[in-house]
Image (tube, rainbow, N blue to C red; front, side):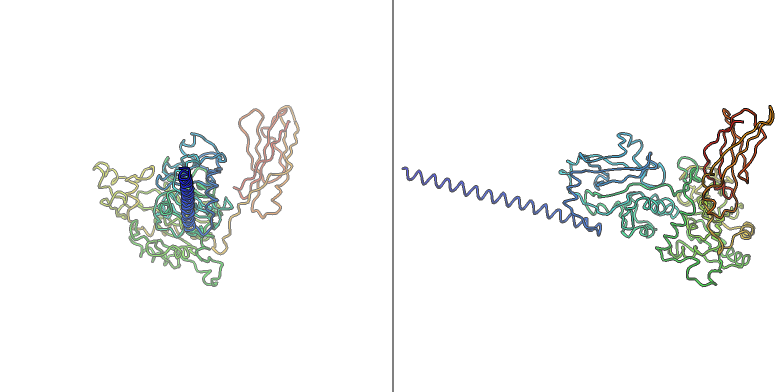
Length: 591
């Protein structure tokens, strides 16, 4: 009995050991399989990241950094309208179409606005200020939530995330996108030629996508393309938003369109951008390898339109320009020529003639001293639509501008039966149609669907050639020589040095105040055509002051100077009538 019992115990022990060994082997196999699956998934996700970029990424290290450190954000700018933010590990959920900020103990968010982040937004994604379709914000999650979410795909490039405003319109492409992108990338050293642009507005490539490709060596990413790479995209280092410093025009969303109230860009920055783009397009300008004969060749460029807003007597206009000015005329067309070819032609032109339209933004490629001639259809007042006049007038663009307006209604052809977005008015009631048809000028209006504006701007025009030639003759006579045209100086004077005052009392009701100073330090290194000095004198306790413009560094004032009175005196230097220096420290002078 005992022997049988022992044999049964041994068998049970052996069975138990065997089960334990098998279970251990199975557990180890399962763990190895799970580990292999994780490795395979990470390898696949790494491959997906590699598909996005040539840059190599350690997927496991990136995932660990996201889990442990979460997202980090530091912004510049005080308001959503001037803010650009840098993020480490900002993520985007392609299914929810939301950006995600993952919180951990190591996360930080500056500025930490709390609920003010939604009043109305953290920042503008485009350079168009405070437009409610361009706001950026993110959702927040704890980093622990990552374990329940799809494994992220990492974008290892430094990225600039933004919205294009209207990529099918050339004016918007340059003014709202290309220029702001170009100078935003120059604000941050790691937004270099290897950075990647990410467009989140949801448009397709658009007609001018090749121009965006010039700004980076890497293919830009569209919002729709992000879905192809995964459900959760994480940008290891990104900048979000655009600088607005290079924009000069507002489109009339809040008030009728016109130049921005505070323009911060000059022609110098516009021309630096144009030069960079031309270099990338392999376009040489005058002063390059062209022959002397080509250098002297002056010509008109006429922008030809083939769909709407036509010049109906274009051939007669071209012939008249040739005969009047003895210059050849070259026609260009966005519909028929590639943009680099158009830029090449415009970059050597003396005079550019075009109907009002987005194509006129190409005037930023004109050489210094050239003339921009903008033609307006009947009932459209040139003073109310000035994006290209404003561009031409920027200090340092050194362009001349002429506006011509059709004043003869019979020289216009309108299309009331067309769709509303092409100027049709058939959908309106009879009373409104009659008002538009009898109106002599489009009143000032907000953007963007004013039917009277659309009806008039899409008219075709027979240009009254004698009146246009008359406008051109005056400007051509005073036009500077293209070869001799040089950048206008934009160097401002420094502070005047050693300002001082002396006073004397001549009688009980008569006194003199003498003010003197030394020239600004930088003046001795400059060739300046005209130097003047501005002096302000204010009696202490009064709200008004007496301004003087003086040619010398020493002047005695007696008019309106009272004895036994304290005066505050400010002095500054002016170059060439409009380049103002800072005021020196205020002088307190007692007579």
